[in-house]
Length: 403
Image 1 (cartoon, rainbow, N blue to C red):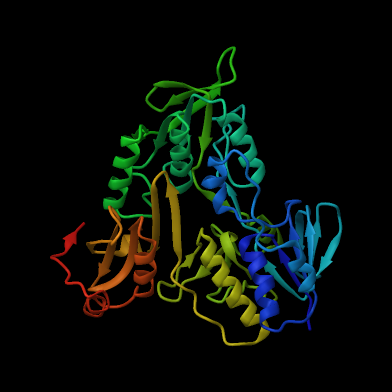
Image 2 (tube, helix red, strand yellow):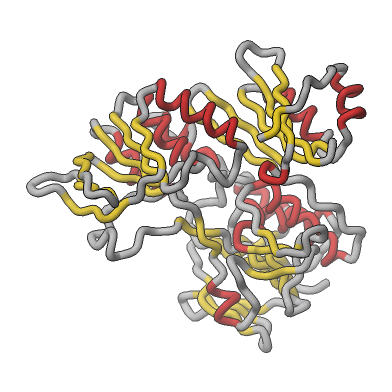
């Protein structure tokens, strides 16, 4: 069997190694992981990890998993060069790692403020455990905070800060929060709830510059209109950028991610790309799409493992996302922005509900608030028509709400 090299100890990278063994691949498998810690779950970092006084990252797999499955896990190593012709990856220490098949699962990094805006590099970001420790150390004594970015991470951090009694201002350049992820109705609902909890929400507002307070440890944040805010710390959550530099340096095509086929293969047949760093060809739209969530990366890992093993390749599931913001647990799946009609479905739990998005009487998107059981039922029904959905739910649809 051929030797397989996986670059990245991400959710997708570890899932690929596991799936390869499950598919019967018995050759050597090596994982190059940049962090010295065992590969760990990341979604909790902006949720319970930030809330709890003491937090230890939960490993993706126990330490003995790698040895039991004959996986070589190289921790604390950074892949710095990829040589396609020689089929090897060179790490930062100059060590060469040969492969017959390569899986790039390099993940992504936070998009950072331009140096002109934050010349002192004062802003905090949240992507890994080191980021978490730095943020918690500052947050524990903070009385005020600015959050730049109204997406999932920004809102999760803001909700935790508010619960800790920290006065929080959130700056969002768009016209609404979570604009990429949810429908306008859900955006408005979330904004109302956050504001009721004390969030100072500034929509259509951008950050012009920030610097250290004179004689203090905090920041002076200057908004585009000239207003200044004095805060103890500033957290920036303006999205993530794919770690596609290794592929770009090697000459593989990249465009907001490493371009790959609908089964994850790059233009080099020996190289695959999965997870946050990869932009896969969507078979329907014929566009390359990059998914920033755990479950699509895990699905991609299983698909690539099957392709490498020469077995039937499963289909990519509908990507799903979740966020926990204060008392609100939001789950999302499907093409929210492709929906032309919306229905609101109440859940059995008090105050819980779902928003169903339809296109031509076909369910294409689901968003639920505090209704995890209902979400899983509806998730399984994405792609079905309204009549079948009505029969499955034993529910008569009201007149549609066009949005």
